[in-house]
Length: 185
Image (cartoon, rainbow, N blue to C red; front, top):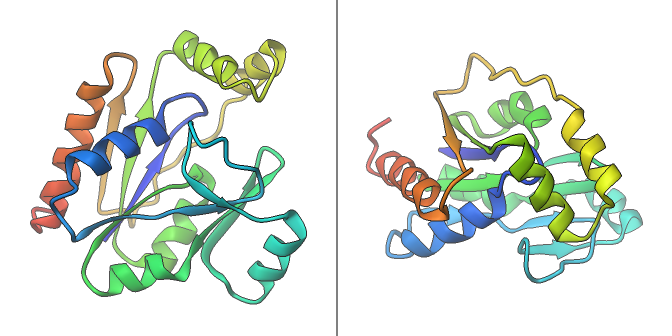
């Protein structure tokens, strides 16, 4: 099964994913996908591989990714190893755009969605703290609402509020992944 972690910028998706990966490290059938992004990794906020936009476009055209999308002026992709891991019966987890959920269902078959959210003021503070955008740009990003419709074919949808201590969200998501791994959904 593929578990799509989605949510607005600043919700702490990558932080939750990192904490959950550590919490379930003893469950080898839960695989966390390393994304490819056309932005240099800062080594702190998210763990990803970097490609230049031209190389990414060439890789996409050559079928390098099982799922790819563009957002906020960048391109993102999941390597084919993610699809292979799902076919081998693993629970595969990745941070993806809400805009590609229908494509994810077509690609992976069984898809669960975990939406990570947080209060708008917390989102704003987190985005500004990353240092990639000015306060005005961050407010603009928060102000944009993204239409979010969970595709009917999704087998499960859970919303997790990450406004408080990271352990609360981590424990909720770890339980969701562990139950998936056990075949509970």
